[in-house]
Length: 343
Image (cartoon, rainbow, N blue to C red; front, top):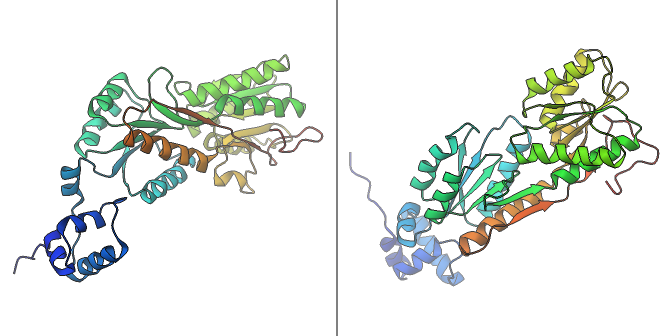
């Protein structure tokens, strides 16, 4: 069996009648090249079966055009959609995405750093992953910018992009109070995360405006089973809540399923409000009132922040919060005149 002949950029240059550097520019995203030259080079490359060597180019330019995307879990319906949008946005800018899965256990992100550094990624996006001081230092030492998506870490000196979580919690509190609810409970997101903490804080602040406080608060850990068990415990109490704000839609669906199993009616017996507005929230089986994460705006801000730091390593970290509207559906009782305006 004969050994396949390896086609090089020099072969393409000879066929196209251009320099090797012109071939390199054609296959380098963002590089300047005349349209006629690009057409000749691409035609020659197709005829010869040439494929540019991205790793070799990375060694020459010092840029891999790869972004490491680190995600804690995909059970939450919000993250598959977010990953798709982030990937498309980065690809539109000429970058390839390497997806890594990481738990929030001690040392997990530190272990992944070895792979991220080995692939010579140009930047890192983490989605709901905690970042240690060691990871922050190693990124800084390697000159790799990192942006946290849907999670913040005050004092870490890292860029982050989130919805306005505390404001979202306040909107939920005001809406439920206006709907006549008086025993408002909260199944929070994991209290080790900024998003879980901020949404819970916003609810408390909004209730305090009305001279109220949460009836019960239980950490749902962003876990379906934990959230369902919390809802059953709340509703079996002597004075059960008449409304439950659940820290994300993923848990809210589990809560609604558990309440139905108990023979309770939503919203007649208890109102339910979530956070995220994943596509399932609009399904007739749930019809969930929820705070909508402004996903496209969050993705655009994340990509813009990361690329600006890749292009200007001296650029200071940015913490972006984007307003999130409350979307009213059928899972929560409304006050008279309630609509989306002002929420």
